Image: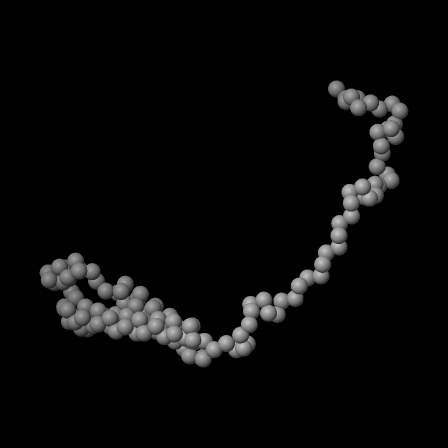
Length: 131
């Protein structure tokens, strides 16, 4: 089934790129006015109006193929057989071990080398800022 999905998806993308290319290649409705006064498109491969008919018919055929591949992709996506035999998304996930309980705030040890306000040097004051 995966081979079909890959094949239809590849065809779908190629047809989409082809449609974009053909639509950009076609002239607008106002471009026909220049051809009437001899702009040189009458000497083309398909004639004066032959290229417009060929490109529009090719675009229509590719649009039909694009529509069919869209339907095919929708069918293949919804009717995919389950390879795991069904189950939950979380089927293979293991739970993490429980976290250790935090210690109370009173039991936090204080570092010994932090000076306390009473241990300050004798000559220093809190307001001793150099001017």
